[in-house]
Amino acid sequence: MSVKQDLFQSPDYFLVDELLSEEHKLIRDTVRNYVKKEISPIIEDYAQRAEFPSHIVKQLGDLGCFGPTVPAEYGGGGLDYISYGLMMQELERGDSGVRSTASVQGSLVMYPMYAYGSEAQRKKFLPKLASGEWLGCFGLTEPNHGSDPGSMLTNIKDAGDYVILNGAKLWISNAPYAQVAVVWAKDEAGIIRGVIVERGMEGFSTPTTHSKWSLRASCTGELVFDNVKVPKENIFPNVQGLKGPLGCLTKARYGIAWGVIGAAMDCYDTALRYSKERIQFGKPIGGFQLQQKKLAEMITEITKAQLLNWRLGVLMSEGRVTPQQVSMAKRNSCEIATNICRDARQILGGMGITGEYPIMRHMMNLESVITYEGTHDIHLLITGMDITGLNAFK
Image (cartoon, rainbow, N blue to C red; front, side, top):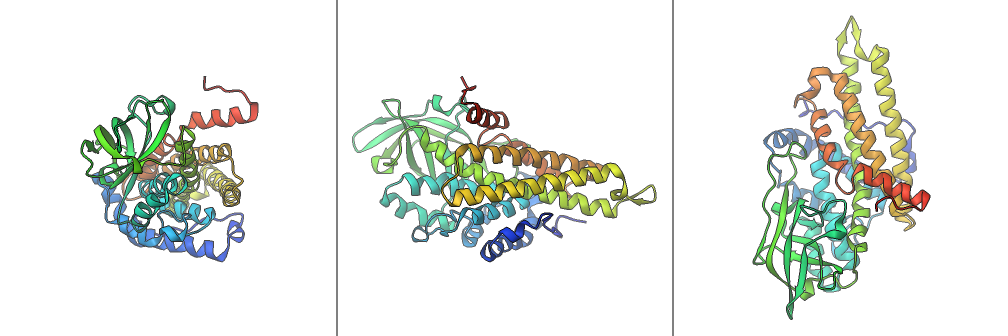
């Protein structure tokens, strides 16, 4: 059974599909078919070579996976958040790096431009990003400031019609291929501001990050700013402070909560099929109690996460969600997906580490996803602070 023949069947133990509209299912199935046709046959090869399949950017734009919740007047899909979640689930079922490309574009680049930007900024950037003509990236994490972004050193200084930007950002998805970067920096008063940096601005470079064992089919890099002149019209007028980037991260974490369940489903589906085909001691290994225990726990956790995500999507679409609810879902989904990958690898034995099956690639990818957009432990503390009212961060 080769990855190149994508036999995936989506598990739905509690008939969660009945909670979805016909439009939701049509959107999901469209992206699922795209992944089966365009991603599954090539992704293993790209991951083995640690190369980004850059041709998919235009495909994802054509499919409507960039900024699907952004209003149609700016090139987005004008869709609800369950539609967005289902898209991310199907893309990550293909590969976490593919979903990261879309998540960054929609939640971290297009969302702040729409929510915090001027009308001129929206009209200039959003249609090109939505179509996939341009790729964007998001600069918050720094070499010495990850979980504590408020201590960032990247800064802007007033210079008349423009500001001078200096600093560096690290672990930036899409950076090497991006035409635009949404960058967070402190002004001279120490207030965090968002600025749009464009490819070609003097002093702006995006070195590629090499030697990754995870997200190998995703492009990751740095953002380096050496006295970059950024016009003042590229500063977001409608937000100041840490709430700007944190608002973006809430949207991105929402997409991750859905996305990683796609990876979990793929590993479960692969392990289930293998357990019925692999004969040991005269019968399929799926007939042994310990293998059934693994598979039963996998489908239980997937089902619980599907229901959590569905409810989160309803709250998100109604504008009633809290960042803390999104944190819980992101952490839960990442944890169960990581565990499911590891159990699936055990069911496949030695075959589980080969590129003939997607499990080891998913497992390595999830080691990044469980860390980025807020680590496993940080999300636990966000929930802890929410329920106790006591801050454990300081």
